[in-house]
Length: 213
Image 1 (spheres, rainbow, N blue to C red):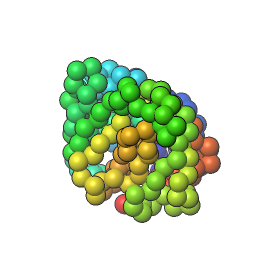
Image 2: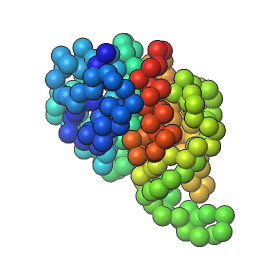
Image 3: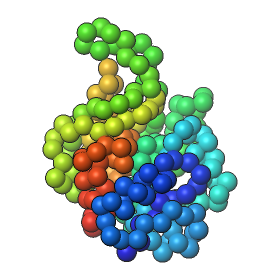
């Protein structure tokens, strides 16, 4: 088995690869070679920074069509991380509006700048740090992870999926209930960084490695 971390120039590629290597003895490669991506048994789509840049780099490296085809055919398990999750939606509000891959119906929105917590203290944007996750519905990737476990987040934009059936995990930040874990068929995507989320994040990656949709 080979796990391919898709290298289109954006994201914590080596951190994700090292975390995967920590939980499995299978071969983990960072690659932009279409043949190696198609030949892999599992795929990871990372992402970091501005979503327009991420979508643009996916197109520049001529990998967008390949990713679209893999998503459409549901040929193998795919894990989206951070902006790798956001790109799977239809559209993002970032930079005046960016069309995304459109695999999940829904949009990516910016946290309101005026949010406050229960003590009326202003909340910072980006949302950065540890926050608890509510498992909205069961999924094999939640195996061994307790309800309301904490994960590590760094984001100014959040996913709002249009179909509740696709929402597997949420996080509350101020007035926003963000859809931070979404799934459909053999695709699962998270806003948080499992490679930075200690035991719970490593367990999610371990579950992905053994997941048979």
